[in-house]
Image (cartoon, rainbow over all chains, first blue to last red; front, side):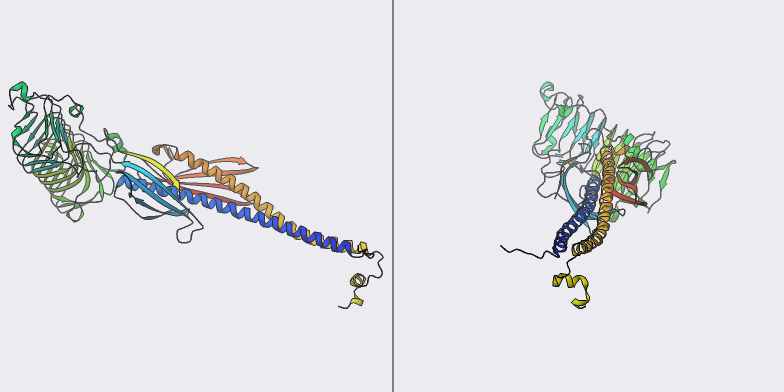
Amino acid sequence: MVIIKNENGVALVLTLALLAVLSVLAVAMVFLGRYETRFLVKERLSDSALYIADGGVEYGINELQKDTNYRGPTTYSVGNAGQFIVGVSTQGQPANYYVITSTGYVPNATNPRETRIVTSVVNIVPGTPTYAIGAKDGITVASNITIKGDLRSDGQIVLGSNVFVEPSSPGASDGSIYTSTGMAKGVYITGNLYMQPGRAIRSRGPTNASKGGDTAETGIYQESKIKSGNPLIVEGDTSGDTNPLGSYCSVDLNQLDNMEKVEYAQYMNYESNETFDLAGKVHKFTEGVRFSSNITFTGEGTIWVSGGSAHNYGLELCSNVFGPDGGYAKVNLIVSGGTWTTADIMINSNVKINGLVSGTTQVNANSNVAINGVIESGGGVNVNSNVTIQWGQLGFQIPITGSPAATVVRSWREL
Amino acid sequence: MSKSNNFFLKNIYTGRSAKAFTYIELAIAMAIIALIVLGFTQLFLRSAVSITGMRFQTIAYNFAADKMEEIRNESFDTIGNPWYPNIWETDAQTQAGNTFTRNVRISGLESSLKRVDIEVIWTEEGQNRSIQISSLVCDKW
């Protein structure tokens, strides 16, 4: 055992040693505090990035509701708060399901301090009436007509020559003819009718058996003119397929009125060779409107006539009316009121429309008309020659009753 | 510096003239401690201020996040009404002895898309501080 006799300087040494230890502890505490502070700052920025990313999901849903073909990617600045990049995929998803992936950056995607990624599976079903042509009082189809989708009426359906009724897309279950009227010749086949296998013609009119064969007193008349598809013929039908729809005006006008719109307080006549920018809005004409020939619709939107009188048509498209580059115009044509000499809506010749054509009393489509969407009327629909109507989603979504659009967020998670 | 010219070191190294040495040691030690403590005091004070600031920031953020969640649970049409579009709604709360003012702005980007900006402002050390969170909300069918 070593005995130290001279203890001079021990206090200083011990103090310095203790001080060194305490200093290390104090420095550690200070650094710990600073680390926690930095961590909290990082956490706050990270939370902000999460809100930005979630905003990207909302942006994606909004874009898909406007156009289900939207895929992005889109880089978007949310003010000075941050940026997101959003994209959409449908890989491995059932129909109408979309995977939206959004990355939120704070303060921006170029030099981010924080990044968060979220993904959401969304089910978006656009609102579209279930029929390609629907009319309360009756449908008259002339010659050389192709209808891809269902024909449905509470009145008589008269089919001309060379009428093709097909599914709206390969594998779709539509392409049938339904009438809820109990009258004779509820479906009157005057010329060659071509259908697809597995489809049906249903009428609530009298059966062949009750009238001694396919006579002019039966619900479906001249069945022999059906040239292909061998559809199921049902007369005296009592199924839900022929329940009267009552209304064939699918537009929720109150909600339509709440959409962003431009109002025109007088009858408008657009001269030939004009371009009409729909600008994503509802264009409400309170006294009617006429578009002459060679009109190009740009953008997407809705032409809505809510009233008026003293003209042949509430809404008239003359000839050569297209979208950009001769394609489909993404426009809905709606007449909800007014008193018109001939018809609510007249679509004359060489017209391509992607949207809903909806009239209150009478809608006419003349020749060389292609409608990708739906044509309907609270009265009758007359389709003349060389017209193709293919059921499809509307180019510009508007509020639809009966089969309203629906968006359901199925899942949300952070990557 | 030579050993012979330095009273303190001379005593330490030679072990001679030990009288009152402990007191001198103590004085030196206390002086050193005082200097170091003074230095650390600044660090601790700054750290304390920083922690208080973070506490305020956490309160402010929670205040903003509460509003964001509230807005997201509203139907699209009622978001921002009746002061939409582009109008601030302001409210305040006092917590931890400080007043936090919350400004909410709804901007109509499209008929079916709105932007929500929530800013919370408070005063700290005589200076205005603020945090902001932003997001988008769309009108779902």
